[in-house]
Image (cartoon, rainbow over the protein chains, first blue to last red):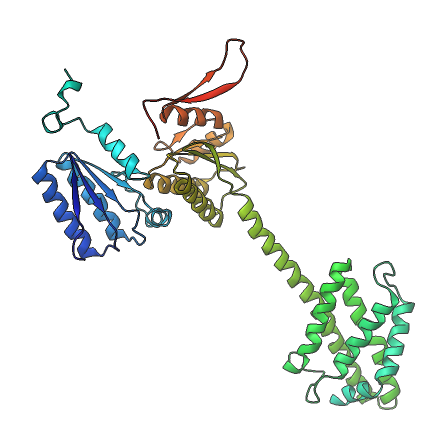
Length: 131
Length: 297
């Protein structure tokens, strides 16, 4: 697999990492994701890393970079489902990733994104909510 | 001086007789071991020594040929420790073999002072080694017990309790060192995943001292929990600990801290959209947490 699929769900982009990330794959994801955010005008990015079991400082830094880039493009990033071992490894590597928002699972991650992003009135037709 | 071993083999029964008489005459723990088991132990030890391979030398106790004797001594040491003997009593039992050996040597080489002295030196050293070996294996057994208990304490001392749906608490008791922090961190993170908890309360009421190292360990745990998407609240900070933390210049500004576990629990309930209210009008202290329909975890 040479690239990670990015799914669009309304205003949000969904990325599920289900393979071991190597450096090139991470960089490709970074490229694809930034392009995609600006193409569709996404308001939020959810990265599910619950299947990711091996992590190194480069992957950690790439995740932080992706979050910062998304922020510049006006999209919130939330990383969900980090495994305990991965969390311990990142902490031991000295990477506390202060810029990244985290959530336990996809559900609470999506809830967080919905809370922090203002509803796009044109796209989902919810005008009757806000008179 | 392999002659001595040959002589012992030849006079095995008379040495045993002498030895048993000496043991029975001397100080012994009649309350812990009866005559028959004592005789059995003595005779088996003597025959283990006598039956050692012909190439074995009394001077070279570390040789492989002596392994059966060592194993037997370790067995005696373990069984006697279980019976309640002190290590010095076990060693005294082995050391009492000297008297019959020395009288045997005197009967054999009494006319030749050179030989006599050499034989006594050899026998003395040999029996000393035997006695030391029983003490060594006693201490080894103790060490194993201690390390096993340490591991068990480590397991016991890190319980993660669920306070409410989505809220877990980790009451820490005892000093945090690196090894314990690792266990604490792993069990907390595992519990967060299993119970799907958004809030974790770390209560340090039972932690006697907080120095920079302990604080660093706590911060690591809190950061790891945050990476997984759970929010950590630190509670149970005693006034002395608060003073120490400030004096040491530890920066806990990124961490939510509460003085009491109750306050931390209340905060966690609030943040998850719940509130504790008094039920009924009769002023009873019964409280219940009602989930706010607006936010479901």
